[in-house]
Length: 261
Image (cartoon, helix red, strand yellow):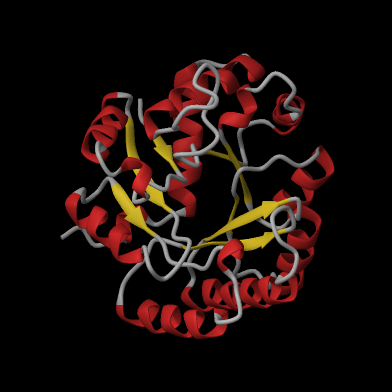
């Protein structure tokens, strides 16, 4: 039995003192692969270093997070595009839009997202989408560009059933994390309706820890807690959750094609 954490920011300073131990605990919890979503052009080298230090376990992505889209975003995207032509990444992202923190750069966010959607199509890479308070807008933006070449995951999905079905119809997966363990989360009903076919597991470490660690630093070793909650919702064995979500993640991310040096 193995799991894949499709979203963990293990390169951030929150893990600076015990990063190796964090990854070791993940492996002991049968989390065998960890996708490291990029957020800016400053930290991507840290992700590459992690992927070299832990080959076959940590996999880097490249993308500009919507909350990091400012006046100079086009210059950053130009630099990222050049890097994409020189270095192999497992996915594009974390990109998308965010209507929660700051709407002053909303137009730039959508332009940034659209450009990164083009990268995903042209490079045939999956895209990791951030959608805080902006799921309908992101569905519309993806739909406008979907020509059969786009695939990816709506990370940290917290929308409603109708939105889940729209995302699935676009050929995308839903990233399910610690929120599913929260008492007032509607994800339980949505998962019960749609099943496992379109789900992948994620932590969004160091954020959004599952119960009973809510409010504390999250880590990849907590993935089985999320899987256990899903197994409870669907009345399926933990092993069946592990098998199917791992299959879904492996179908989305081409781990086997990523060079292990």
